[in-house]
Amino acid sequence: MSPHAILVHYGYPGIFIALILEFLLIPFPAETILVFSGFMWHQGVFRIVPLLIIATLGSFTGSLIAYLIGSYVGRPVLLRYGRYVRLDEKKLIAAETAFRKYSIPIVGFGRFIAGVRVLIAYVAGMNKLNVPLYLVITIISAALWASMFILLGSTVSAYWHVGLRWIEANPVPSGLIALILIVAGSFYFRYRRDKKRNPATVTAKS
Image 1 (tube, one colour):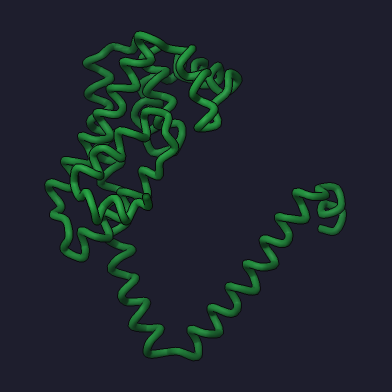
Image 2 (cartoon, rainbow, N blue to C red):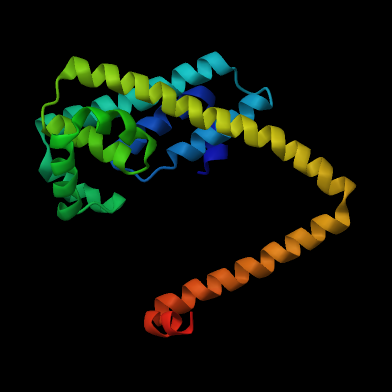
């Protein structure tokens, strides 16, 4: 089910559950959910206060569950199920090393980095980070993170409608811009494909 379908069918509860699932090592587009919810808020589907509260609590709850799993079960669970989010032992060791040096900044700012957000919650539990301190940092960072992507979605919605009106009023320039983007995109993806097939040849050409 797509993020948009989740929001349409399940509303606020869908947002809450979706943001928890991300922390259970289930690949899930949390940022996309929030951007779409901001888009729908701008259209009048959601209200901003309950939306921010639900999003913050969903991410906070997921972080707390991951912390508890990391604290009581720890490394075996991460290494067994982490492959679904491209986590291996090398990445886990690197995360633990960084966490021991910069635990508080990582808990606070790591939430804004996809993948790191989930991993750090488990590592914090594995390293028995002070629970009250973890909860305070987590609720603040969750609120800031959710607000940022919800507002981004609202902004996209506003400019989306402006863009559509401009396209309708200027069909020829719009068509030329679209053509340029298509051509540029085709060259870019062809370059990426050739680079994967034969890195040495592409490097020599460039």
